[in-house]
Length: 180
Image 1: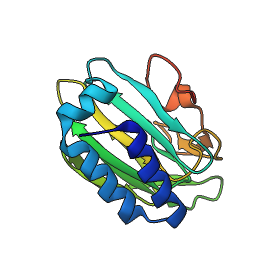
Image 2 (image 1 turned 60 degrees about the vertical axis):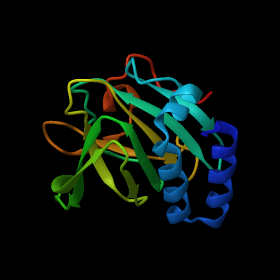
Image 3 (image 1 turned 45 degrees about the horizontal axis):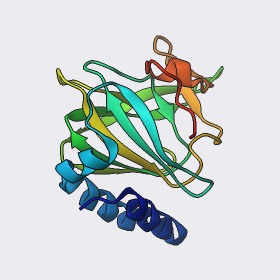
C-alpha cells in the first residue's frame, strides 16, 4: 500500500546517504502498485506537474505528460530517479561540444522508459523528453536537492546553443511549475 508520507520519509533517509540505488529501489516499490499510487496522488488524466515534496535535500514531482508533449534539452544539476507509473517517456541524452563562441550540444543516445521502469540520471545529464504515446503518461521524478533553486541551462531548439534556463520555455505545461 503506497503511503505518500512514508514514501517521502524513505526518500529523505536515502538522500542523506546520497544513495541513488536506494532511491531507485524506493521509487520502484512505489510505482509497482499503481492502484494504491493512484489513490494517493490521482490518475494521470490531465497534463501537468504536481509538487509532492519540496525541500533543500529533496524534491519529488508527479509529472503527467500530454500526448506528444516534449521539452527542450536541459539539465538539472541534480541527480534524479524517474519512475514511470503509466505510459512512456522517451529521453534523448545530449553531450556538450565545444564551439569557439558558445557551448552547443549533440545527441549522444537515448532511453525509452515505460510503465514500471525506473531510470537513474546523474547530475550532469543533459536530456530532452517526449511522450510518444497517444494518452497522458505519468512519472514520479525524484531529485536529490532543491529542484527550484539550482543554476541550470537549456539549449535552443534550432541552434542547440546553451541559454539560461526558463521553465516556461523548456516545457509546455499549462501552469508554471512552482514549489508548494
